[in-house]
Length: 302
Picture 1 (cartoon, rainbow, N blue to C red):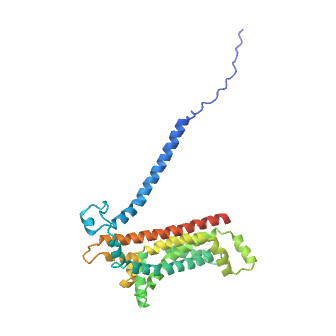
Picture 2: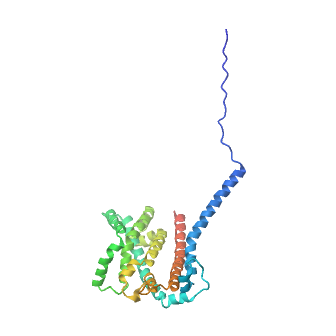
Picture 3: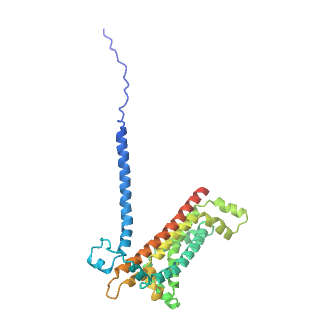
């Protein structure tokens, strides 16, 4: 008689993944940093080279534009292009017209948009959701459709040959997006803030100016940034309603550097473009800092 013996099971550890060596980790980290720096360098070239090319091209004379490759740097710096752009191209006068249009339009868009956003999001009344939907629907209306009816209305009201058609059109075209954004920002404000203000005896106007507006100031700066560039860089609306040469804005004035035969004065044109682009860039840097300060203040309060 034989007795079978069963050997006890042998527990073996599962195979472990090979541990990367220190040299492999260093190589992977170096490759990751190198790829990141390469992407940043490509982005810098894509963004900065066009601005450098515009600035360098603005110092060329007319013969260099016609006889030499466009990518070639100017042989000598012709600063007279900037003098021609400012005097003969009336860039200073056109910039003043752009300011006279942009500043009041931007002020009305922010005040009316913030007030409408507050009324539609914070105040409780019947039909506010439908009203907000109708206002937001204005974003879908392209500007090309409203130009001809507005031109007829402005002519019958006697507003032609003034800057009011531009201001009214910019305010009406910018309000739907502004109201939508401001209503979204007011939605993020805690309702306890308004309840505490009501208990302290604040009325609806005091609640709006002293409580609601400071809480959404980062949103106001963001909307101001978007609307400023939309109005300042507009060509279609300004070209449609500007029939008087003395009322031309910067973007319309750039068309004056070509004659009736289509010949362009390249040097003054690129000088005017350089002044417009880099002055706008300074405004962007200034407003962008205000937006970042507003975001930081909002995070501390939250």
